[in-house]
Image (cartoon, rainbow, N blue to C red; front, side, top):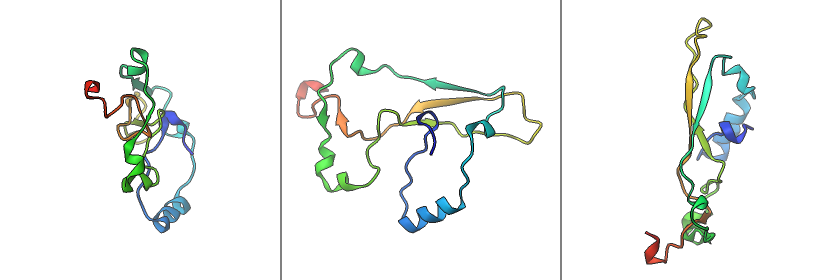
Length: 119
């Protein structure tokens, strides 16, 4: 399993497809993908929690039919990283890869969606 810094998005596939992917996959260290000259830059956005207290409201989607979908909600550590690329063994000049917070539904909302002043 990958660390949160280099996490993968959940795959929406059947259990049979997931088993086939797992059986054909080989765990590897992130060091096998990056060279010593590569850099990963995390682009962080301003966090509302630093300025406004959270209401910690359960996402209303949880109580809908969509809320039962496995892997629908993302946690605070859900980051995506630009695809690593290497153009052969001679490619050692170093690359810069960007990492951003993954967008998508969270299980807890910062604002109360029933509050008209929240928007």
